[in-house]
Length: 231
Image (tube, rainbow, N blue to C red; front, top):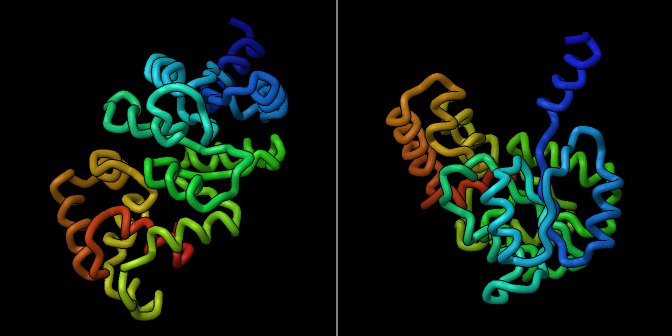
């Protein structure tokens, strides 16, 4: 095998596998042409049912997902995420919403379902590419205005807290590491593997983090971390 062929295979292996879900073929074609070389589009879908089937079969790294889609029970992109959540094979798949809408209800519904970010379709190909890379890496990606909707929705009811520095001081260095990974959506097993801990130890750290920060679950933890720009 030549060096150039080996280089091509290395680059291919490193690319992020993407599925584009949108009911407008013109948009799918245009977006595909504008995406950067870091992304490898392995499939497309145009409806809720087609998206669920295609994503389950292809197991992509990232799904670029329209919010308003035909089919299914009328839940659009949020329904796609909900129907695929919990499938072990898709544990590493991240969903990045793309929509013409910047309405708070649309943003919050798809994020509640499990999407890791939300961009409007005014974003450029390079911006979508950068967002997909970040989402694949575990980050949450929103424009400042849209992030405000998420903070309002998930931050409500958390109660008054101390200053961010004081809150972080309550956590040990290891608890802070675990907190950031859990808030980014990592599963306990993934955290354990990354930090060379047992799953039981990770569970103990998460329990301690929630207790010290007076939070109830990982959704509140994500909102807390987003609000303090810790992700």
